[in-house]
Amino acid sequence: MDTYKMGKQKHIALVAHDNRKQDLIKWTVKNADILKGHFLCGTGTTAKLISENTGLPVKAYKSGPLGGDQQIGARISDGEIDFMIFFWDPLTSQPHDPDVKALLRIAVMYDIPVAMTQASADFMLTSKLMEEEYDRNIIDYYSRIREKNF
Image 1 (cartoon, helix red, strand yellow):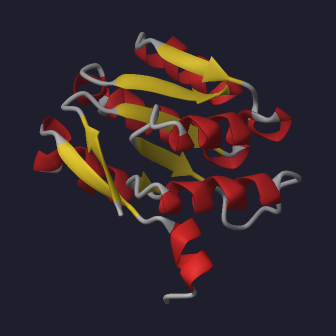
Image 2: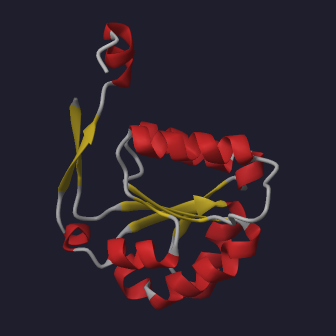
């Protein structure tokens, strides 16, 4: 098992499906004072809207269906994203559902906190761990598969 140290300032990905963008924008406006102490990024339109509505700098990747989910996943696997807030729409099928599933799989593999509801985002953002360094434990799944040691 590898350990990766998250700094006191977290690198937070902000992602939302179309039907949840306004919810995430409202949430970020409400929490802008906390979020301003961290590094923010997000997928296409979501990043742009959050930045416009909060004045916070948000690094924008491509739109989710155009590869943004995969870009965020790559940043997670490279250790460049520590935390993800993903307000997804549980009732609408997305054309890029396989990308969303892959993004969530990568988040689990690299042991990053993921909030998918306002309640979980509220609890996580106000946790004392948000202001501290934190050691994530990354399981070496490749070795487990090779050794068949489940």
